[in-house]
Image (tube, rainbow, N blue to C red):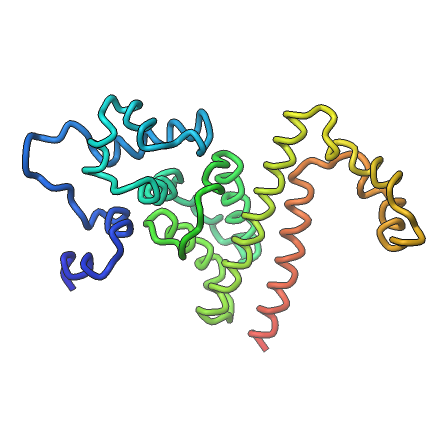
Length: 247
């Protein structure tokens, strides 16, 4: 199928992600580029957060009128789609000779690092499966880590999707807690254990009270501790699934 035939079957935003749609060439030589517009939007999001990104704000950043941007990007939703791919680098190479578990662990840590470094990526609405070349490269890397197992293609895709969902939710929760503790010195999150100890009635919440008395809600743990614990729990379940496939 030619590029033109393929492009005609894809949404406009996906065409832009893959360079299958060109800006019209009529009129004077364009002074802007789609890449410059997206880069400016990313610069704003890095400095001020995703809420600061608007077509008018990006136009100001690149020194153009707002209307000039629409020659390259149809609307803000399309701009966000382009940012969601341009805002990430390609995945790191998996460790040479790594087992599937070592590969997925390295992949998961790298995914989390992307979201913790650029939290605004988590705020872009998810409107469908990964569509851009960089996002698909991350999906490919996760699938590759499982390539030596007896899981079929659908099962490997399920595993990567489950891990992605966990990593996304865990990163979002940690970023919220970090923001709360940074912005509010009296944040409830900073003394979660102490507050629980005062609030929980052992007669009403016996299991929770017993856990609180054991100390897991005491001094706040580094966010990496909870990340690693949750990841290991998921990987243990994946190991059992792989073992069933081998049998």
